[in-house]
Amino acid sequence: MARLHPGTLPSLPADVAKPRYDREALQAGIVHLGVGAFHRAHLAVVNEAALHASGDLRWGTVGVSLRAADTRDALMSQSGLYTLALRDAADDGSPREALQVVGNLLDVLVAPEDPQAVLERLAHPDTRIVTLTITEKGYHHDPATGALRLDDADIAHDLAHPEAPRTMAGFVVHALNLRRGCGLPPVTLLSCDNLPANGDTLRGIVLAFAQQVDGALHGWIDAHCSFPNSMVDRIVPRTTDADRERISVRLGAEDAWPVIGEPFLEWVVEDRFAHGRPDWAAGGARFVEHAEPFERLKLRMVNGSHSALAYLGAMAGFRTVDSAMAEPALRNFIDALMREEIAPTLPAMQGLDLDSYRARLLQRFSNPALQHQTKQIAMDGSQKLPQRLLGTVRDRLAAKQPIDRLALAVAAWIHYLRGADETGATHDIQDPLADALAQRLVQADAAPSIQERVAFFAEFAPVFGELGGEPRFVATVARHLGVLETHGVLGTLAVFDTTAGG
Ligand code: CS2
Figure 1 (cartoon, rainbow, N blue to C red):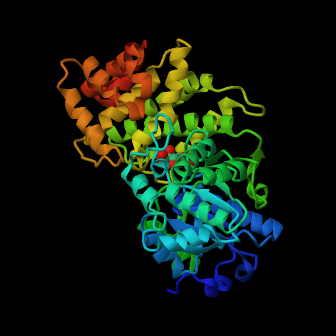
Figure 2: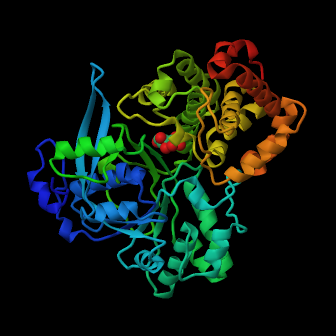
Figure 3: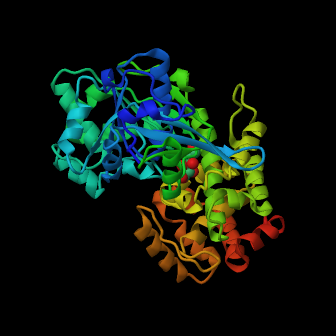
């Protein structure tokens, strides 16, 4: 079978969408850091629609992998082309998928192989926007406070090696220094990661790094670059070999690196761009003055309940999100978590009906065609819990409202950190703070009671901040962890309403 390539585009089946603009004439106005599946199933697809709608060919993308070479190796043999497969179930329950070949990714650079090339691309006169999906841990920040960790070894390395950085902060700041030195215009830095006030967080990190490099550079970035906040939403499970095979058969050409997503997509972006932007509204993006309420809504409802479902589901032995959702006790718990504990913390928003938002979310989580692994969502919990669950806990504690369901979700994370589910199957703890967390758990085990164990664990400030000192939080998590350890997930949910009260 021939490889997917510009030459194979004309012979693709008629029901596969493909680029309709002049790819050869496309310039690279966007540099995307973290060119993983999410970027290719979300931002790049909206950008593709903008190219189709506007014909403005300044907005091609150069992707950067900050770690591995696999995406570059697969995609450059396809001249950057790849397939997006949007999957859900038809009315009779059978999986269906719509295919689109996306063309605006022009090149992929692998930062560890050639950091200089990445710096040059960021400092290129054509570059106007730098978008980021580098996941929470790519920011090298303290998850509880959002501040850059200047004691981090990679950050220290990047401060000392402007010519060969390793981290996002190092690349961005040293490249901005080059731009400033050459008298080039500033850029927009657009974080599309699941962080609260992601633009403000990115700005704080970039400025903190710049301050260490040069006070005048700090001032230039502060005055000229923009950092819009944005909310992104689309469920994108990891692509499997079965996906690759099925998609290649339908294309009649081999695609080694397709991406899978749900049909649903949202992107809400603050309209503050330092040097122009594509017509992303044509691809479904919504431009607003303040994205923070949308981010809060999404992080708490979508990601908070996703993480709760992932830890509870994985511990009960459910491999996928939809199989966990098919268990009535779990589905009812997630529904009640959103309805009773998360939704009441959200400010009213014009045009938003929280009940339909929740109902649609339950449906999205139940999509059987995605096969989204609970363990994929369970990773990096230390980086995710603060904005997904703990902010909601803080708000409810302050309002003297019950936190039982949120506390059970936190307890499920601690339960998961044991490294084995309730069927006895073991799992690795993938988390940048895995070692520190494991050490905490071992030390906590020496405490005489579960209450004291949780109290000691919750003193872990990078995740819990000051929450570890809140007696009601500690007591409620401890009570639910005790029940989880004795009765398991389904046993806990069966008696949940009788053990609640915190
Ligand atoms: C998920 C998110 O892996 C995870 O942690 O919760 O990737 C989630 O699927 C997206 O944020 C949905 O927009």
